[in-house]
Amino acid sequence: MQVTVQPTTQTVESETIALYTVRNQQVSFSLLSYGATITSVQTPDREGRIGEITLGFDDPARYLERHPYFGSTVGRYANRIANAQFRLGDRVYSLTPNEGANHLHGGQHNFARRPWRCTDWLDERGAHISASRFSPDGDEGYPGDLMANGVFTLGFEPSLTLTYWALTSAPTFVNLTNHTYFNLKGEGTILDHEVQVEADYYTPVRPDLIPTGEIAPVEGTPFDFRTPRRIGEQIESPHEQIQIAGGYDHNFIIRGEVGTLRPALRAYEPSTGRTLEVWTTAPGMQFYTGNKLNGTLVGRGGKPIPRWGGFCAETQHFPDTPNQPHFPSALLLPDRPYHSITVFRFGVMG
Image 1 (cartoon, rainbow, N blue to C red):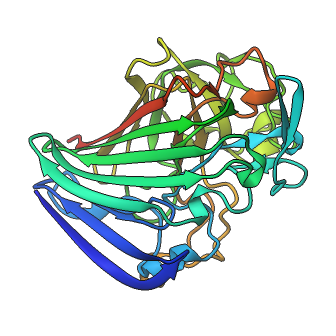
Image 2 (image 1 turned 90 degrees about the horizontal axis):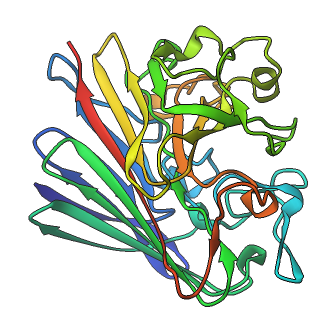
Image 3 (image 1 turned 120 degrees about the vertical axis):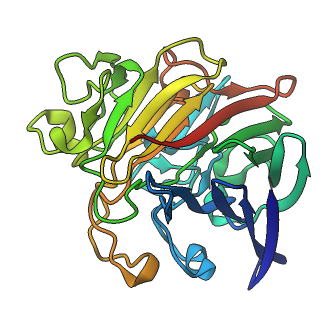
């Protein structure tokens, strides 16, 4: 197990941005302190060849520019909040609108657009990188001073564990997740990836991708991934929800007890044999297939990133939960720390 730290020439908010890289015998990953961003994950294929399985850039400085959240830690509230506001007690809080009239991923200057303070250490469980970010009361409109922390752990097995914590000084809403785009082939599209999602229900959306409030069964729809199915099989279906999003950009309700670590998604790429399992303690997972990528953004090796070039498995509270009281609560109180775990398990099949 090895950890290397490479300071960059970039400084943001008086913090020198650094790139941390962790390797074991099977897997390596890199984390940039700006946005607590996973910039790289490399795993072997069935022939033992190590290859990149995420979308991103060769130059760490590119992550300081606007991009579609490649590998970012997003918050305070991941995903969308309708009309950029919510009611808490007898007060309505106005947030920063940054996707039309709505609030996305924590606002204009969200956690993905700011430096985090990072430390690293080794112990008997593996290599750890801890990233912390303080968000003051009123930041992007949210109430309460908030201290957020993410610990990224590469164990001796081929798995990467993300553990998120947060403490608040006043009641507020919190939803932290990671926005890595995976492509287990390392190039092209993810349409031939076979995916299984442990969900019987999903949350349909309006044209602006805000949940309607309905809890809809996946059975008989393009959202039925209860058994493995190619992502591309129905990604251009005439189904209204597919047409709204231009593919998949929906929250799936993960089976099992919220707060317990349980499987959410399994992906298999047949040409390389690579597999990815996603486990989570969160109530939901946003499955996004890179519908807004269009080939104009240049990624690693100078190659344009195509539409459907990667998929995200954003473990989370449901979108717009602060305005949907029948969704599992994302309310954080001063006497109860926020805590969630996501595990990415990497493997190969013959």
